[in-house]
Image (cartoon, rainbow, N blue to C red; front, side, top):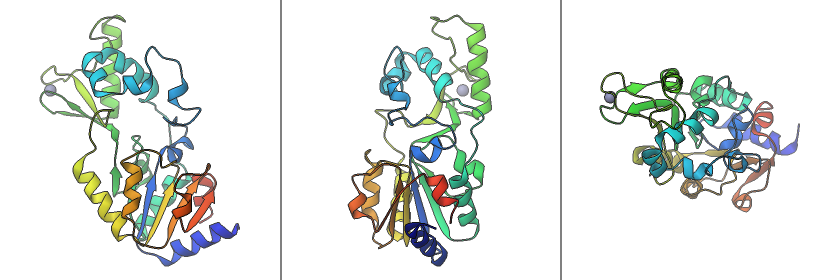
Length: 253
Ligand SMILES: [Zn+2]
C-alpha cells in the first residue's frame, strides 16, 4: 500500500469524528459529467453556454430551453454510487463519519446509504411547484418533462416544462442555480461540522469555487487530507495530499 494511503487509513481507523467534503470528481467516477473540468459540460456545444442556461434569470425567462438542457444533461438515470460513496456510508454507519458535505446534486450519497448529507448546491431528487410548493421526486419530474415534450412542439413556451398536478404552476428543481444563494442552514451546519472535525477529507474538487472553497478555512485540526487527481491551490495547507481517484483511494481504506 502507498505510504500516504496508509497514513490516511491510520487516521480514519483512529477517528470517530471524520467529515468528508466532496466535489464533482466524486460523481464523475459514477459517470456523471463534471461541470468544470475540461471534458465537462462547459465545453459541450449548446445554443447558450451552460452557465447561462443554469441561471435563475434564464430559468424564469426561457423555461422551455432550460428544461431541454436539464433533461439531456441533468436528468440522468442509471448512475450508481461508486466505491467512495459506499465507503463513506459505511464509515457513517460505523459511527466514525459525522457528515458528508457535497457540491454534487445527484443524490448518490443518499443512495449509497449516507444519512447526514449537506447538499450545498441542492439536489435533482427534490423538485417543488413554484406556486403551491407541492413536492415532486426525480421520477415524477422526469415523467412530466417527457409528457410536456409529447404534448407540445419545440418552440412552444410549454415544451418540456413540467407543471404541477394540483395548481398548474411550473415545477422548479431544488438545485441552486447561478445568481441564487446557498441555503443558509445547510451552510451553517457545514461550518459546524468542519469546525468540530478531527479528520477532514476533501475529495474530487479543485477547490476553485467559492463559497464552498472557503468552508475549508473553518477547519481547526491537523489532519486535513486532500485527495484529487490534479494539484489544487490548497495543497500546501493540507497535512496529507494524495494524487489519485477518490474511489480508488477509498477502496484501499
Ligand atoms: Zn402547485
